[in-house]
Length: 491
Ligand code: GLU
Image 1: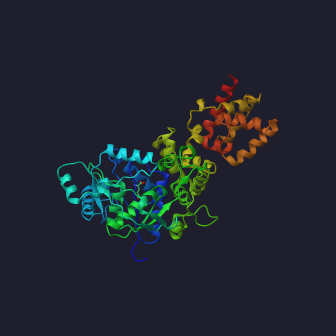
Image 2: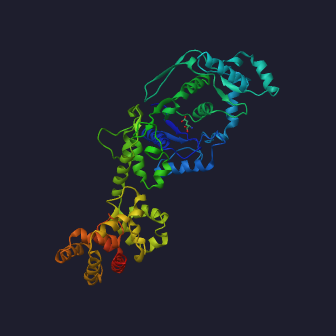
Image 3: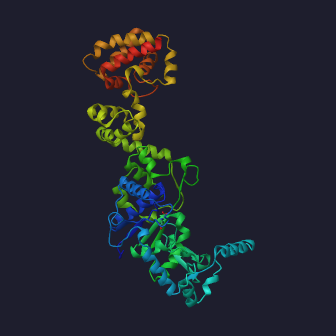
């Protein structure tokens, strides 16, 4: 490759970063890194009503959270700025004037009513609804005079006759007849430039070599390619990434999984798992490896290997993958990642956790085999943070215990047996064996022992190993909970 690769991600800050947008960013980034090229970030904020600074900040944050970095962009600058479209209006207007002067574009004075009429007539004749080129024939002198006199006008692109082929690395080269393309509006009557126009100006200014973006932009590509021609520029090579589909085969929607990257962050998906999973949305390392690193992606990524067919976004697989990543963390790392979720769930303050950090690491360690995302920890360990006299009891757990008529006695007897054995600290392994022996001697079946014990200590049906729980709670809390549970059950 002779020219250095320059690719970009060009989000519109009109909403949260969509998970599909994050994939577009990732594939562009990987392509740049693979080829030693540059990855640019450009903010397409030409829709002033819907674009906000907050969304822009959130999009950049989301990319950083994933570990995607950019070589040029609105925050880091670069030689081809501005990297925010709203800061480039004078440049776009200058290009529009240049295209009008060269005859590649023209002023159109048609009113909305006239355009509506034309569309209706075309509709009635079952024709394609396109601009009828009414103003295309005006002489440039006439048009210029009308504009100078203050008449309202848009600038339209003059689509030439012919046929064009554009390179698409994913879908195969795309051929289209120019007559399928409307004389589209480049600049609105209020002077604001339109999406297709800005994108081409920017991709030219930023010397973009490859445009990889979602399939929904395929319809725009012919317009854009013709504009490159008019500007006497070589169009970039394209790659239109397949749609991301829910497991129901329809476009990804809330029904089959969250669509905003932010939601996965908020729910506690490890970012490395999100990256790995996004890689699989249309690309694969090989036919068997699901889990691989970002370095493996960079070393192996080729746009031509991206599939054309829709990519199925399977949230169950995503969660499984999150669990795989979470289990690779050290308990210390996992504790750090889970702590904000415990705080957000109001179980503890950051200061509480800091004061008993070693204990919290042990808590996390016992749950590590059982959770898939950080956000699952709080509800599983909430009982550890509740007052001993008011452990929240799940109805189901209580119901199970009610089936054991001797539960109260069992709890009291076990408490009496346990007290001297944990007076100097809890050895979970030793206790596990000894307690089972005790139950056997007493003739108490294990469910009749464990279910009341778990209710007393945790209030739930399932959870961590009970003897680990005893160690985590510590002697004082265990004895208190056994006593309170016996009273609550008896009363
Ligand atoms: N701003 C467009 C979007 O957010 C992307 C345009 C492009 O990649 O060409 O969908």
